[in-house]
Length: 375
Image (tube, rainbow, N blue to C red; front, side, top):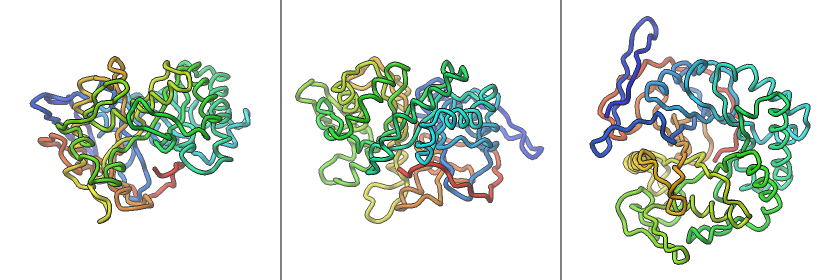
């Protein structure tokens, strides 16, 4: 199936961009599905935001998640149909508890762009409750309220919602899915947050990586199970629901944990998931083949607009991590190799990709430090 592409003029040359996702003999339309992309910029060799805008619109990605509120990116996507989730770094949480500072942040980072660029969500902090900084944890919910109050005072809450992104480290138990529960010591932070998110109809963002579970126990966890390939799966002994992949099991464990805190009215969205195409020798499973299989099969799942066994009527929303390989990310080699694309615009691997004529990219020589906690 051909994803419809528009022609683009670049450096006085017209580039006709054709992107083919052939999965099981059918055409995959990304546009309109619950698929977004994480656009990280911890690198010194990435294409300019204007080139990225051409690329993402050519493959009809309609949702983008940033880790900051980069004005160059927001301006590059002006008058496009792309919806943006922007980030407010954890280092700003204490300031956001001050109403005047929260309003100043919105007036600087949101208000100037929202008339032309579709900013729909602000992620306040990243994986704060999965860390060990209790002072930062205490700022998180007040900061979320502060940002929301600033949006409300400026009349923007009909356009923009507020959430935060969590890691699976907030779970005390996750297997079987029905036993999902948050760590008891986090209840003081999560309970008021969940009550608030229920009131404002805000999604619960979770970063989920089956890769880490497999890497940690490759002899106990089936590679087929984590890569969405045919396998015998597992049955939850409490609910009798059958799971044929780890991502859905992890997602339902989050729903179970939220339910234990009194809420069944909050949608869980996957704010990050992906698979590295390269890693260090001890990073078992980090290969191009596995990355292509994981993301390709994930897109097939999303194309079907199916839910999890526990929430079959709620289509899953996913932000794939990440758009580009990022050469300056700290940590093991895998951290630098989650991208679907190399910085020059060529695909790292082929998710049923037949051929593509991508716009020529000019490489930016500048590196701007981003406000995020590395996941």
